[in-house]
Length: 407
Image 1 (cartoon, rainbow, N blue to C red):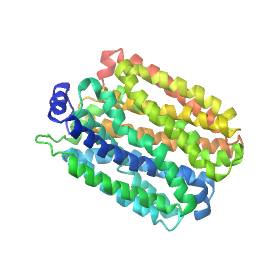
Image 2 (spheres, rainbow, N blue to C red):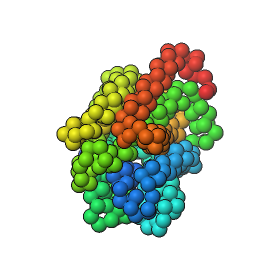
Image 3 (tube, helix red, strand yellow):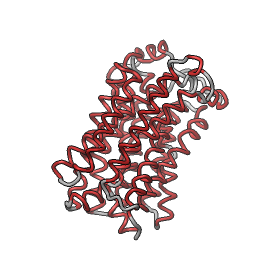
Image 4 (cartoon, helix red, strand yellow):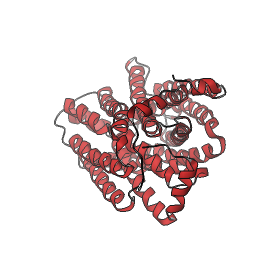
């Protein structure tokens, strides 16, 4: 899949009616909703999975990390292997694969098989979002790229707002396995909608893996990925252990956990929309605005966790960090050159590296006896480190020779 020039994007946007564009974006968003519900469900289902498998909370954190590792491995691999397929065919294949991976998760008989099933389920995640973002940009006006990318990712944040609380409720009432059955059903619905609404491209030149890898291996690309992998880990550090934090620190019953998870989702939806808006106005400079605000909110999380009525707005505030997603995704399209598909997919690999790093660091802090609320301090530290990487990346972009050189 080749890169999208502004001229090509304008022509594609003109060829698609407003109504048809809305239907395509709805189909792509539904796929994001399925992925987001699956990705984050283990966090809300942590107490139920602890009982079901007879393991500890940090061990369920490893289930979360196994999925994230699948994304890290699968995103570049499937983006390269699928580079010769048309976007429509690749999207259909990836979402069908996702449905099967989640059925395997629902039927996992023990802890070890669940780790494997979650790893497999994570493989198509990054490639789907990468190709989805490129498809949305191709049917949108060039000056609305940030908005288009944020719309493809809104399904991810809606999953935190609606899908994850629903999965948590299902886990508490009819069993945690049904949450993954639900995800499979939504994935199948996505396949049907993409097949119905996304037209076949007339001329879509395939990419050669060697050319895409060469274009990908540039310092600004790696810097943007590092910002996502490290800077975004703070959200997952807090989010992964929210359920036991609410039970052990806030002192509420398990019935309140879905509401706490929904707070992250609400913040994510607002942040996602705001992130697209910020990028269309500030471009790459939107990164420190989001990360520094997130660091402040993460520092406040520890003191807010003592009461439900301060915890809930704190989860919304931390969730605003989701605005980093569309900012970095769109920035990567600007710096990746001919490696559009690989860079777009790798963006989600980086964010799932954060999904693996956050729970791991949080687990270390909790295991060291620092308490459940220590996740807020650990998260703030990663957000500040991400800001430092941004400063390095911004300096690199001001030096054209360095920006163009291979990493």
